[in-house]
Length: 273
Image (cartoon, rainbow, N blue to C red; front, top):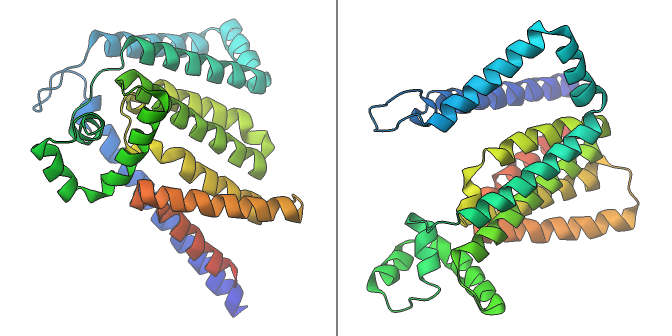
């Protein structure tokens, strides 16, 4: 009984801590100047695209709520045929991403720009000073250098396309995680991922924040299959090895990406009780 009590207490503590930090994340996202309508002290302004998009969402929501026929159509498409609709929307979002990247692929400054500049400019004193201070980005720069040599191309378009592929691959792995844990929720995760991908500007920034995503998703997927599935032993051992390699890659791309591993480790210790 004492073990069960300790287990329940630990679960509740983890639950409350997790929800507290999720609430903080949501709160600071909502009060962010980037989401403020109108002019802000930071000099941000709401674009006409944002205003029209918000008005469109408000109009559609009111129409579905007021018009019964339209509400029934909405429920049939997005709830009764949820799996089919979610897959179609997910594919359409990816196609829109590809078009968006092909039409824009701008040059980026900051750390992503420093990495890209180092692919062709190896004698810049400014870049040498940057890498002497930001040694964590050397590994990513070497990876991009290898890809630039392999494709004989160092354009922003190439690396934006690679970046887009990695982000979408992470979304696929996330969907597989939900499929392993509860197949009934696949349509839900596809809807969520479609919204995220449609509004995710980082597909234009080939940097460690995005390049590490599929590796994190892969080691989480490996963990779910190894510990929370009924697959045969050989497959689980193989995926455990794959997960270990993905975890190592996550560490070398972005050190903070292995925080999820430590969270899993601590929770699994709790479950030993």
